[in-house]
Image 1 (cartoon, rainbow, N blue to C red):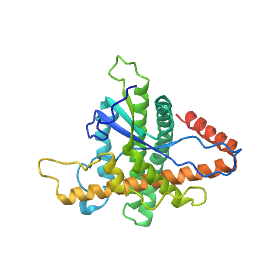
Image 2: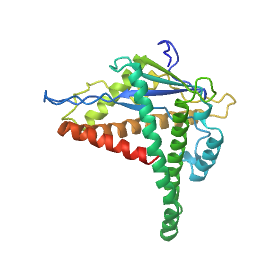
Image 3: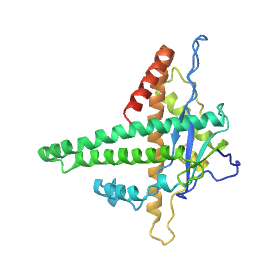
Image 4: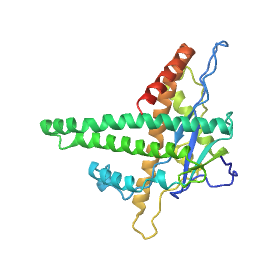
Length: 291
């Protein structure tokens, strides 16, 4: 495990260096002194990848296009070509670097199991979706939707599996993945953004985050994210604008989903901490059995 300086880059499109950002969930208010505090947990955020080209008429890419992209990613997996994984976390975090490493690896193992399970479910739904389309005359709408779900699940399953297999690889082999962990104040806007998302869902159990809330643009700018640029002139200003818009939407939806899951878990935790931990352990066990 290595530690970079604070002046090192926080974002890169180099396929050999991949950045993951740990955004801490806020701790809920609790007037019961006897009740323990919930553990420090994070949302693992990675900016969406560059687009091969803009979808026609600014619509979502077709299921056929995504399946073509899946074939390419299967042969040239970013997870396999990656040489270094940089995990960035807020410098206000209380956890040690070793604890953060264990948390990240554990989360990836959980994601691997869940993604493999979801991929199997999504793939099994495809024939049923095709039959429903034929009967309802929806011109492939349901099939396209389930194909996209299958594509994303299979892709995430492959990525998670490739990464977790390399975590334990020997240092002397090419399969070994260097993991660099570093603290940075650049994640402060993301932390504030997550606080506001949780407060918006549950105003009773979370403190008021303040009047000034960072925008999606400010969160991405803080980690030095920029839209992809093609030097041969094939990308127009409209393409760049579309990519920025999609990146903002992706961040918003990711944060919204994470905040919803966290606030839901914390409600159960505040009611019965021991039961919440038992259910959490039970889910981890079921996911482990599903590998």
